[in-house]
Image 1 (cartoon, rainbow, N blue to C red):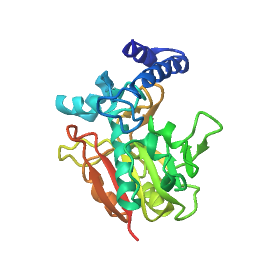
Image 2 (cartoon, rainbow, N blue to C red; image 1 turned 60 degrees about the horizontal axis):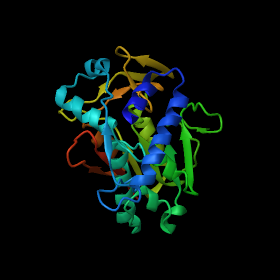
Image 3 (tube, one colour; image 1 turned 135 degrees about the vertical axis):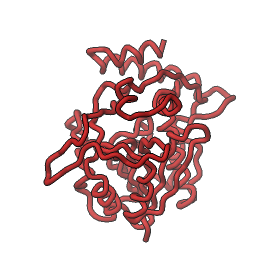
Amino acid sequence: MLKFVLSKLESSPNRRVVKNLAEYFFLCASLVLRWFPLGKKCPVCAAVQVAIYRPVVSDSLVREWNINGEWLDYFNRREGEICLSCGGSIRGRQLSLALMKWLADSKGVIADSMESLVKHPGVMELKVAEINSCGAMHKKLKKLKGLAYSEYAPEDPSTRHEDLLELSHPDESFDIVLHSDTLEHIPNVDRALSEICRVLKPGGAMICSIPVVRDSRPTLNRASLEQGVLVEHMAPSYHGGSYQKTRQYLVCSEFGEDIFDRIKNHGFDLEVLEHPSNPAAFSLIAVKKP
C-alpha cells in the first residue's frame, strides 16, 4: 500500500495531500516498529529497520550521467530504499551515522540513533547549521536548541533563506554544518566550501553527502557562475527533491572522487564513512583544521 502511495505522490497534482498521507503511513508503522523487540534499529528513528524499495533514478538522468547498470542500482538503492518507520533513505541513515561518529570521537557523546542523540545534554547546546533539509533527519534535528535551519529560496516564507555562496552567519559561529546532496547544485563549489569553512569553529565539522560516481571519472562542470551570471556548459540536467519530482534542481557539478582533495584544500581534514555494501552511499566528515 505504501509503495502505491509513493508512486502516486510522484504524479499527483496535489502532492502535499499525498505526502501527508505517506507521512501517516510512516507514523502508523513507527508506532509498531518502535517497540518491536527484535531486529536492527534505524539510526534515524530507532525503530526496527524495515525497508521498502522503489527505483527513483529516471532514464534521462541515466543517459545524462552516463552510468552503467551497476551504478544505477547503487543510486536507486541509495535514494529508494527507505525506512518504513521514518521514510529515511540509505543516504540519510548513513549521514546520521556520520554525525554520531563525529560526536562520539570529538565530544564523547554516545548514541545509537538521532532519536536519542538530540536529547543528549552534550548535544542540545551545540550550534548546528542545517543547510537545506537533511531528509528524515530534519524532524529530529528540529529538537536542537542551537539549530539554524535554512533553505535556498524556500517555498515556506517562515523558513530562513541562505545562499551557500554568501552565508549571512558570522565567522566561526557553528560547531557543525550539515548538508545532504546540495553541493552539486552550487555553481561555485570552491566558494561554497570557503563559506562553510568560514562559519565553522576551529575543530568543527562539515558533515555531508554528495553524489559521486566512483569509477575514476573526474568532476564534470555542467554550469558555473561567470561574472555573476549562470552559464550552462552542457544541456541542463536535474536532480529531484523529496520524492524525486516535487522540485527539480539544476546540476552544476557531476562529482568525481577528485572532490575529496578539493575539500581538503579548503582547510579540512577529511574522513570518508563508507557504506558496507553501497559505494554510492558514503558520507563525509570534514573537520576544520585549527
